[in-house]
Amino acid sequence: MAIRPAEQLIHKAAWLYYAHGLRQDQVASQLNISRASVAMYLRKARETGIVNISTSTQLFTDDVLARQLEDALELDAVWIAPENDYVLDPSTDIAVLAASVFLELVKKGDRIGVAWGRTVYTIADIMSYADLQDVTVVQLCGNLGAPYSYRPDQCTMEIARRLNAKGLNFYAPLVLTTELLAHGLRAEPVIREQLADIGNCDLALYSVGTVDADSHVVKCGALSPGEMGVLREAGAAGVIAGQIIDAAGKALDCSYNRRVISASLASLRQIEKRLMVVQEDSKFQPLLAALAGGLCTHLVVGASMARRLLDHAGASAGAKKAS
Image (cartoon, rainbow, N blue to C red):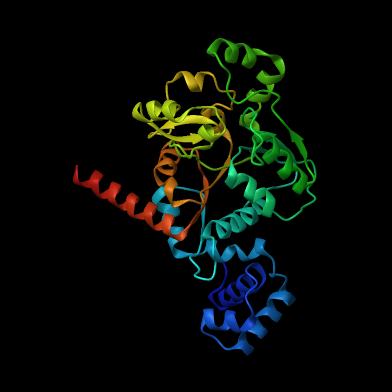
């Protein structure tokens, strides 16, 4: 249900006060209202039960820019974290919003596919605890040997723990040394069944990675910076669940992808709700690739990224009309 205009200030005041810890006088200054009004709005928020991050995300769902972006990108829903001068790290604001959005999307009995990376783990770490019935959280790709807190298995199990859900890990590495080994491992009954069941998930949570030296697949040792450079010259545009995609959002035809143990892009597209969260503005091109490949139905981004996406969509539409 859309928030009525008269309620928007209540949601804004609650968000600033409870999510960001601003004092009432700071909220009043931010919203250009009196401190007495802030106190009244916070009281109404408590009385009506909207003083939690989950319901206050409706404020961003009803944002005009979000609606425009949904139409331009043909997405089911977009949430935009606003730019706030008082937030030292805007990416944290995006993760807070994304954690709430994720909890809103999860239903009892759902099967949830989870990828990996710093963004996903930050969401898991921020996420409130919930006690949902019959929820299963499954790992979308093989694991890493590196001792990172945002490994695929740890992201999966932390989210399962927060939801009081069952967690299912892949007992396989993300990438093998040869294509023959990868082919054989995918044929093993346990791995084959896990991969085949990915498309039956109700919700997926992931981000998209870059294809530079800062890429997670480079930092974890799956690819060297030189190897990533070669793939980039061959058309690599982003990383989804450990796989390299091109600008059209298709799996790049390369040996690395043939050695990866991960859900196929086709199975990811079968998942009804594909929630993509992007914190960094440096991921603009990878995000465009993921969107082009139909790997996103629900999107959480910051305001600056949202404007870039909308400008790009407008420019692309104009170019098509001109041709």
